[in-house]
Length: 340
Image 1: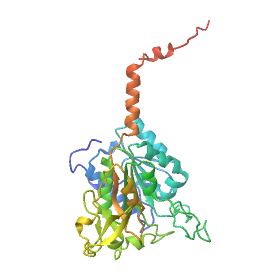
Image 2: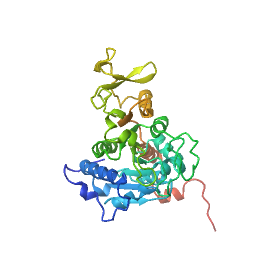
Image 3: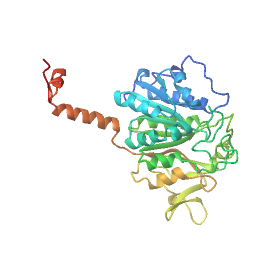
Image 4: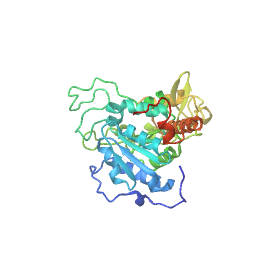
């Protein structure tokens, strides 16, 4: 994607004139602020940007952006976004979706977009609940959760977004928290510059139907010890005092404390987001508190042939070999009949 000169835009340039109608305190406010900051830094011309959404609270997003946008139907945002990108590869296409929209009715489209490596930026708002339809459990809701559709507690195992992406041979997966605007902005910039499907899971808070769902890891007083921000090429160290780290113990990750049992920074794993083998990246995306810190940042970012480039290359190849150069050639190609 061609970028304009630096400082061509400010975040305000990407704000539409529409009143934002998300609930006060909703995590969506922080998410849109981070996206607007990222777009301003990227400097992509506004007419080269399109936001496509499905159905859900998050899907009002295109109304609030001063870019092109399309509010599609439930679970089908991936289909629309794919068509937009393949038809016009020069566009920077962003899909806005939620855990229900993307992983329930839209689950099939989601995994195949990842598998095909279409050059889309998919921001998946994960509040582990259906908010717009008033509090039913979703594919990412924790087992045992009591909701309007699971009054005795859900008996289902939840999806892990990161595991789905890596399992579908995804090339880019990152995770952030709605309130961490600085980290989110950095991730959105990296996602936009990545060639291929970029999936960003945002741990988002629904103040009405699932308030505080991520507080056990995201609250200010505990987040340093219960999350780890991964940065490519840096050791996997975390904790309020930067005194904890991750090592590989056989075939499993293990949390250790620096200074104990002779453990030093040299023993700590160094994050490699560009490693083609997804083994460790899969384990990082799977980590859950309290056994592990929850991994944030860019977990996986590897190159790969994109679907849109492959389609474009195929069309050019066929055109070079084809004897059909115009409409007359097409109409007179193959078997023809003369009607008297």
